[in-house]
Amino acid sequence: MAGVTQFMSNGSLRLHRHDLPDGLSLGPLVAIDTETMGLDPRRDRLCLVQLSSGDGSAHLVQIVPPELGGRGGDCPNLKALLADPNTVKLFHFARFDVAMLQRSLGVRVAPVRCTKIAAKMVRTFTDRHGLRDLCREILGVEISKQQQTSDWGAAELTPEQLAYAASDVLHLHALWERLEALLRREGRLELAQACFDFLPTRGALDLLGWETPDIFAH
Image 1: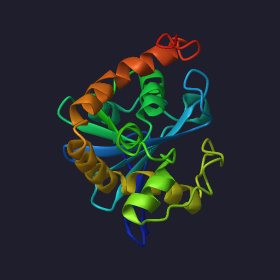
Image 2: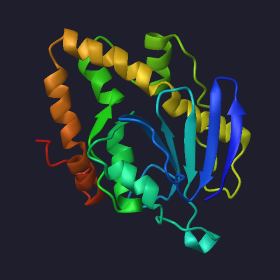
Image 3: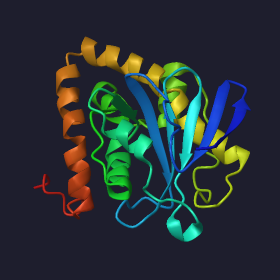
């Protein structure tokens, strides 16, 4: 299956339509993010899945629905990676992405880790846990959010959109390394892992409408 390769100043960006190429290996820990038409996984369409092995490059899979000439959720290579029990999937705010991927592709994404949860468990001195804040404060890296609200359902994505999408996964490995060290230092790694293990179930509950009311609330 053909893909289009573009190069960025900090590595390579590869855009694939419909699925990852056959035989691609991204290692035991893969950073993943999604771009969608909105923030409700029960309603909005999955448009793009970004992945990185942490080597400075990113693979972007554009999910095109059948009514627009695509294959929709027919992406066996991507789904196999998402469900692979030997591949850890690293997200920032995994709760949303896991639910979106489960609903759109029909796959239970596990095992997972989440840098937002990790940050909230060790950075209790602040309420700034967004990816941009963490990259700036922990890694000294500035990432742009200018394209965050652009039209991800367009047939042709702009170079600016692709660069933005890639930036959301290129720094997750380094961020997780720093946060994991803090979790160990504070004695909270085991508790964090229990939270990560629950995320696929939390996503399933959200898809069934138990986000509001939250069954864990009083």
